[in-house]
Amino acid sequence: MSRNVLILLLLVVVLGGGAAVLLLAQNQSQDISPPPAPPVAIEPQFTPIPPVEFVEIVIAVQELPRGIVIPEDGVALRPWPKESLPRDNIDNVREVVGRIARTDIAREAPILSSQLVDNISQIASAGSDAAAVLPNGLVAVAMPIDRLTNVAHAPMSGDTVDIIISFLFVDVDDEFQTRLPNKITLTVLKQDGTLEFQSGIEGRIEPSGDFPFPIVVGPSETQRPRLVTQRTIQNALVIHVGTFPPDGDFLNRRPTPLPPPTYDPARGGPTPLPTPTFTPLPPKDIITLAMEPQEAVALVWAVESRLPITLALRSARDRNAPPTSTNAVSLEYMISEYRVPQPASLPYALEPAIRSIRRLILAEELTLGTLDR
Image (cartoon, rainbow, N blue to C red; front, side):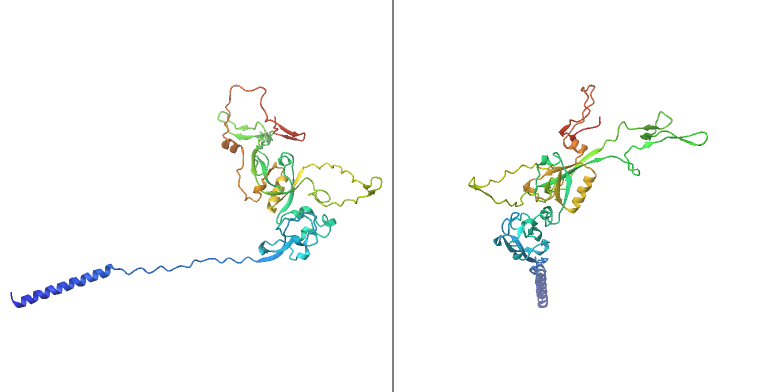
């Protein structure tokens, strides 16, 4: 082999090796990716809460019973949120000390100008006691009660009750707004072209397959109302049970000054006070409740509609519990919920016939469960 050929072969080998090394370096550079950039910390976005503004008002720092002369150590200035500031608040302790409480004032409760009078004789004259104890934003409304509807007269002032109302539904004519079925008056075209009206009957006209003329299907009795019962207003505050006394002291805690004892020389001591006489309580036939204004409108509507209304006494431990929902109770609900079977029609029955539900008589004027025979 000539020298030129050897040099040429060596040159080819060198060039090929260089190309292979270059290609390998390029592949390695493509496989090595740059390290990922560190994550950028995102600052959380918070909606700023506006600061709560406080103002100082007079607060009771001890229980202040009705009729007490408010002492200096019984009240103090405390911060109170401005958004929920009572309407008749007081911001000066000197306007409170030495005055008389119209109503009981709880500890840590704000003292209102409507709760204070200057002397005992003004306790009843400075507005009604009922308005003084009525919570802000609520209104008082009265409704009739009896032993059954008022939980056997268990509720007292300060309790809370739920109101259960029963509704009776009947079908009525859309235009007449009268109970169905309508009265049907048949007309006959006489030979002289005039119409003759026959006496009206109750029912509806239905076709008859066996008779060429339609027939009138009438009811065998008056339409039976459909009863639905539901709890409506919840957590109503009992202000008073019975009629308010003429002097407005329905809490029976007004301080009554006693006559000074007189000296009796023969007995050597003061004359004993006369024995108090017992005054019978008035009948509890009405109750006054505090509730939201719209709820008061609904209750008045129910009373005006003469709907049966029953009160349910709430526990003192869930007085501030949130409202809960209940299911309206109807005949369908009772049968489905309590699995009441429909009795079979038997070829025998009891004598005498059962035609009404048992009557529960609580008083001469109160009879429940009566039905038309």
